[in-house]
Image (cartoon, rainbow, N blue to C red; front, side, top):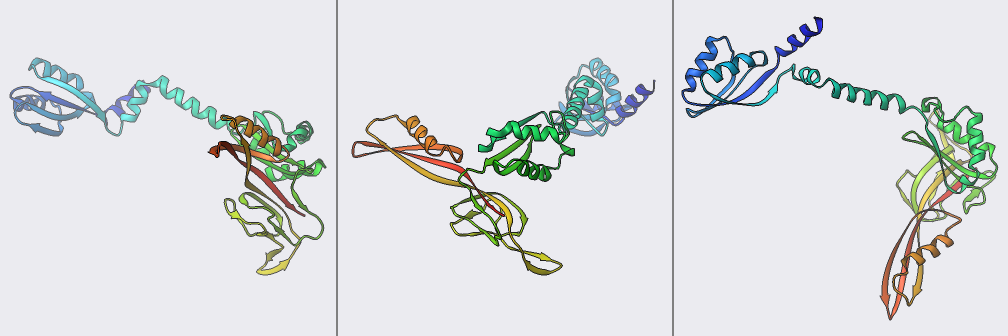
Length: 310
């Protein structure tokens, strides 16, 4: 009973739009008014056509009068403050499905379903996974209970084979990117007061534990450019400190392969992959041109280059 009262209350603020066609529209309008049907947004187009809105609760009475007087009516739609509730009432299954989907996505978005290991350090992924388990992080753990920065530091400190670790949440996966300490990474030890770039590239990430970053993600840097400086501002005072930081660059290089044969793009790519296997390649693209009866294949390679100071 209470449900029906709520529905009836909502219907009072719902209106139906109609198109009416027929002769002597004034007679039709007067008949509707005598029957207590209120008319809204009435617009007449000549003597044979009009647009009108009525309360949803008057629909049956409106149809009966139109049929008796032989008028052609066409329903154009419904509107009003109560229409959203009327739509939900008519489409309970759909509304419940949407609500359930939202609740499921919201509820499960905080849960970890799987791990993904990338970078050259993935060869020790079993050791990394053992560390994750030792910290209580496993499938179906909650992301809200994981301290990403603390986890990165922990993985790096517990594995002497790694020189770099980055942890990110992507959907319901935990992405662990790592680099072996034997990679071609510029590592600075001792009392380092600055970190400089030894390659040209675009900054992908900057992690500073001590010092002050002088570049931002997305910035193009040149060889010799200062990336992290050895100072910090403490209570408006600038003091010199040693640098502890890592910067990841996305670098681009080209490998050229010459051949008298056409259609060897795949071979050129394989040769480039063999040359850059010890780096962290992102992608390869090949262009080819013919010159003096010879095919020149140029493979553009993008790869990650990690610099560490500390």
